Length: 215
Image: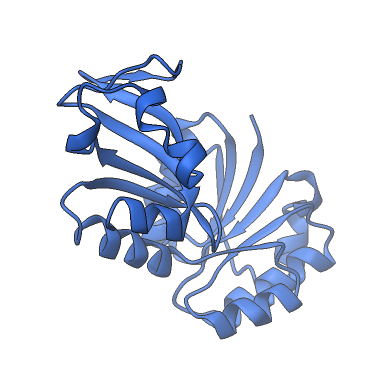
């Protein structure tokens, strides 16, 4: 369990609060909009109505006591930048800030952010890949060069084993798991075979994956 200071309770911030609650973390939520704070109350440990660009208010929260501070402000970049900078000045251990554009990310990183998240950009990439290939069911980008794909098992793999397809040795693609009849098979061996209705989780270099699976 971690303690999280979540600043900004728009749609993105509210969804973060809901997921953190599901994961049983302790969350202090902050927004200057009373209605947003009220809507988040069922999902957070504590909540405050206030302006996070106000140094006295932010200091009163004891930001250095939280494991991570998340700046989820999306509609006011100036406020996001000021909040990020103040958090670091007040001794925040880790600051994660939302950015909509690359130029915003650069300023945020220069002014205290330890990590940047791009919800719109990341979701756009996922949507473009997911819905332009019939056999892609999910996609997670790990970095600029590597990704995990959940795909339907290629027809030419059906009835064959992991040893037979040998994609790790030939293409550097790792088979992480097989989903079969709603259950996840994680103990993959060279003798594990593939059936018609399987979906598989594969990890590898993005270019190799795109080439091999025609993504």
